[in-house]
Amino acid sequence: MERRLPPELIDCIVDHLFNDIPTLTSIRFTNRTFNLSCRRYIFRTVNLDTPRRYALKSQIEKFEQLLASSPSIVSFIKELTLCLADHMFNDHSSPELNDAISHLLRQLTQIAVFDFGSEPVTQWKDWPSAIRSAIKIPLSSPCLTSVGIFGLQGVATSLFDACPTLEHLTLVAVTFEDDRSNAMQYRPCLRSLHLISSDPDPLPRGLPVDLTRLQQLRIVYRSSGFLDGAWFWKEFLEPVSKTLETLDFSQLGMYMIFRSRVLILLTIFCRHRHCESGRF
Image 1 (cartoon, rainbow, N blue to C red):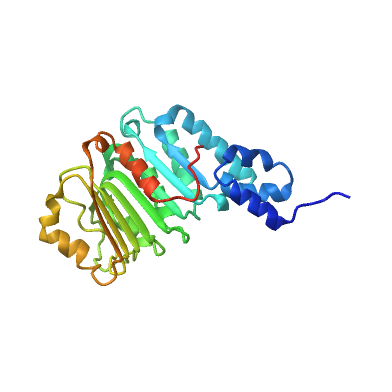
Image 2: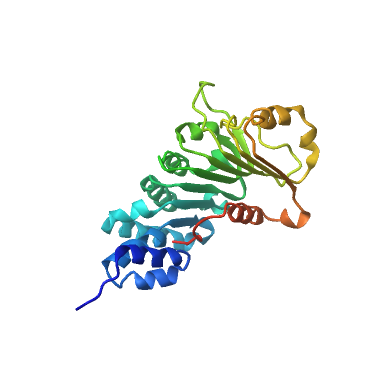
């Protein structure tokens, strides 16, 4: 008589192998139960990195074909990273690539973690309009708890109007531009805020979030001059004076400033993610 492992034991095995994607990919074909359990981790993380632009469009198309054939996979995708590079903003950029990225973004409605930005620093208004519009979809996910933005100047504050469950925010070299018509628009109530600035300029002002229940505040800076500014105490410390449990100031060494990628990796490592990133 054939012996079958109970589903609970299979889940324990797969949970132990959560960051070993090659092994999970192999054992998923053992039986249907293994397949269902492994897919939770195999398709958990999507990384869209446009420096690989020549291969990215075909990879996105193949991934969309997979989603079309197995729509349930979309529900397994919980972590998304979008990194745009210089070629997306010049005359030689591919409209087809922009459309492919935006179409994929519009399908990811159950994201829990969403990181997006560019390398090097770019202006939000210069991003392709199709992608700027599509980014609002994962940001509106009812499961969204964590957002990271890196290398973006003039980010529209209205992006945060549809993030009711957002709790953790990380900003790396980011500034905001208020495009809200009504100052009383909804502001997500954060539990933790992580700010990283590699420039001597002050930290971002006008954060489109509510800090009155903040428990953790971490600031990594290059110059400590902003600590003397009254605006800093009013914008960051006064709102959190009654709820803050952890306050951490760290100064960047020069060796950490030469590339924004170092800061991005620092952000991701400090987040203590459950799964390692995979690429499609």
